[in-house]
Length: 339
Image (cartoon, rainbow, N blue to C red; front, side, top):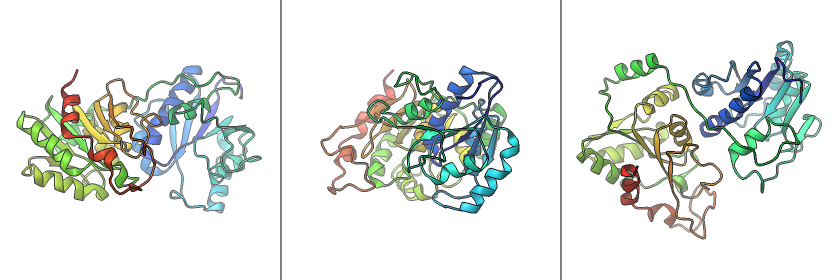
């Protein structure tokens, strides 16, 4: 580890919404250890709307390549451009070989990360990942910000996204909304696949009951989630406000901050809701709530812990998706009303 006094650290960030939210726990840990430390994050440009809501991050640097794109010369060129920044250390959250190229060619003296794809040489502070001791993604991120000798698993601060009142007001005006203490946000999508998506009809039943109790129901998701959101809205007599495919990530974050409660699959928006300190009900199917839980004391997780779960598959290998269909709307509704 370099001398932390006025150190400048480049964090190579992840390419998923949820992982970037969890990365804030690392940023907070680094700042708590040395408040004067500067943290810059190299990440896809679409993540900037998250990073700018994390006060620990001084600057976001755009990775000019899309997820999965190799772009050897682009990575080398970017590394050479960053040499003059004077970073003391790079911390690499992705485990890929290619993600280690830019810090290497930037001549950053300490390059920290898990061995991953045989990155000996590219890393000079290579850590072996002990999956039995570091059972959670957030623990793995935070451990990279600590000395090799630190006791594991580490404590981790919970992510806390900061909302600007002016931006909040702008989305209210843009979508002509009436703020209320009874707003239920539903997030029926999950990028990974259908084995993580609670049935749209179940979401619709939750929506119908809360609308009958005087709640507003807002639907969130990307373009890929528009069919599920449309199905929910149709089943509720089009009484929901459907934001799916209509917002930027920044707008979705600010809108979620207005909700009282969020019901969601294991998704990026689940982690956003938790980091906004919203009451969150998270439904888990093929994934493991112990590995990537919502990091929020208000969060409640529903998982049946079937023998076949977690399978981590995009589609149910057994064709029944019981891990999702046997979680009934009434269970979610009970958690919404519970203290």
